[in-house]
Length: 444
Image 1 (tube, rainbow, N blue to C red):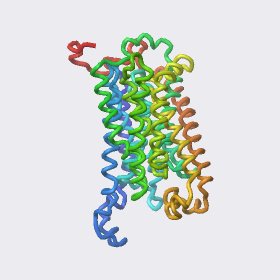
Image 2: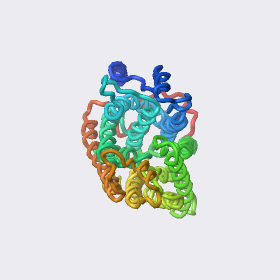
Image 3: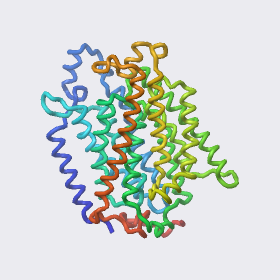
Image 4: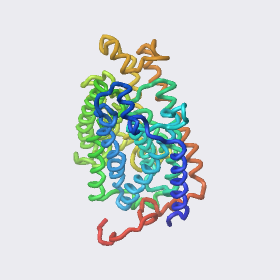
């Protein structure tokens, strides 16, 4: 039965968003009518120099990934397609509003008037913030109520904004594609909640915890959207010019390498050399996750191929061996296998970023290139690449601490018997929360 508190929660929280936006949120100088005055004051000759024209194509791609890519990737369960794509929609729509506020207080607050000034880059960052919660949702798919998902998102966005500020501003780590900030945090946040919400009798819904032919086809649509647009995801907020260009190339190559390795590993370890669609849907994306932190660094094209190759192997083997181990011995019921697609590749991405940063040199980057790539300015003007490598490693540790620790705390809250979560024998079934019509004509 649908939780009776869902309409109230949605209305109350949306009302709160309206009030908070009214108090705090304003347009930034590039989206405000005073842009004309700003142009004259800064000798800007054309509207094309407005950041909108640089960032909007990337924003559009990231937005598609959040709503179509993640949404359809979660439609693989035979009777939970509405829940997969519909609750993804709910989480993202609520989360991006809260993210604009939380990230705005940390990054875009104008101290002269106490207002948060938002533009196109804030929208991209809000989508990134939401991505961490959608990753966490993947570990809990089919086992939680929509109200629990709203609570998960509220706390998840808050934790994300804090850990992002610590990693990027205080520790001064670079993480263009979010291997640490988004994927590592989001995956371990969801896995920790799943551990806290462990269901010993989940086998009562085992008949529904699988896919059918058409549900796997729909899920692969999500895979393809994610795969195609991942270069935009990793390059969306990098510096204009060579850094953004390099991030696209590195991601493009890592993803291509991962596909071949995933297909090889899936065929090698499956009976009769056949392919498993679960591997193709998920492990083919692992290279995009792992190359995220180092996407704008001088990873080199062959380095990107190596990262993709390794992640294809590790992620596919994760689905074959590690996921069953986690459920049997660690009591972690990971519906979508986010440990294999996001957690392990995210950690690998953090390590690759630390090594690549520590190995940077003026002979490779040039002095100005080194300063721009690693933002060696202000308080960090005299930082050396080897020190930056240590800061990158520190950022990975913070992401792990916030993901695991935050997930355990939020998991404890979600265990309270007030959220209307489904019974063990009603998990993975849309009929628990959705009006479902015409199912009697579909053969499962």
